[in-house]
Amino acid sequence: MDSHSPPLLKVEQLSKKYLTKKTLFKKEFFKAVDNVSFSLDYNQILGIVGESGSGKSTIGKLILRLIEKDEGKIEFEGKDIDNLSRSEEKKFRRETSVIFRTQNILKSRFNVYQILEEPLIIHKFPEKERKERIKKAIVDAGLDESFLSRYPSELSGGQRQRVAIARAIVLNPKMILADEPTSALDVTVQLQIINLIKKMKEEKGISFLFISTRSECYWYAC
Ligand SMILES: Nc1ncnc2c1ncn2[C@@H]1O[C@H](COP(=O)(O)OP(=O)(O)O)[C@@H](O)[C@H]1O
Ligand SMILES: [Mg+2]
Image (tube, rainbow, N blue to C red):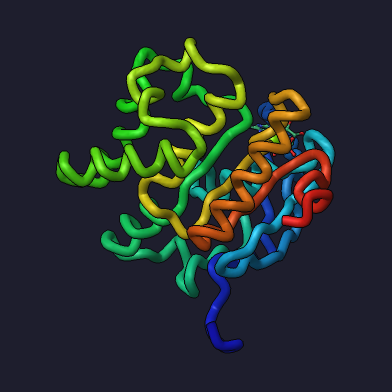
């Protein structure tokens, strides 16, 4: 990347308020995100650290366009994500994924293979390629192929989070939003998951927006 290339993700003066109370005469708002700017480079892990309720997840939801911003601008690879063509939109969806603290998808009745297959079906990958990518993703996430036929209820917290990471990498994304990916885990397992995230950055060049209430990512020199 030369110095003139845009960063992978650029967030400029982002603001979001939530409507908290509405009566006939007045509306009350809560400002969850107020004038936030930052950028995330290719092959970088950036920590967003703040106490609970400080608006971290709101920033994540705005970037993934799960909710609408009030003000500001978000660019992915130099393009305003509000003005993408249909094909650019598809590319954006394929190149960004997310890992949450608790994985609702993992409470599902699907087995691990089916959980990893879903994004590949959505993005219309042929069956043979789906199979290859699923096998690679599970191994890259530090589990072996025998886990593919297991169900989430049969896995430990750390194994479940590895499945979540496998699902997040199965489309070869450029960016993963990790929203408190280790908060629900035991301390020893937290370190394993952080090391896995570092490995994904180093080996695959994936950038991470790492949301946390603690600066754990920095302790381990991400
Ligand atoms: N849909 C919503 N409606 C109203 N308030 C909300 C909504 N979502 C979040 N909030 C409030 O916005 C603030 C920031 O929330 P959030 O972004 O989830 O913080 P964090 O992830 O840092 O804990 C909190 O005070 C939360 O209660
Ligand atoms: Mg949160």
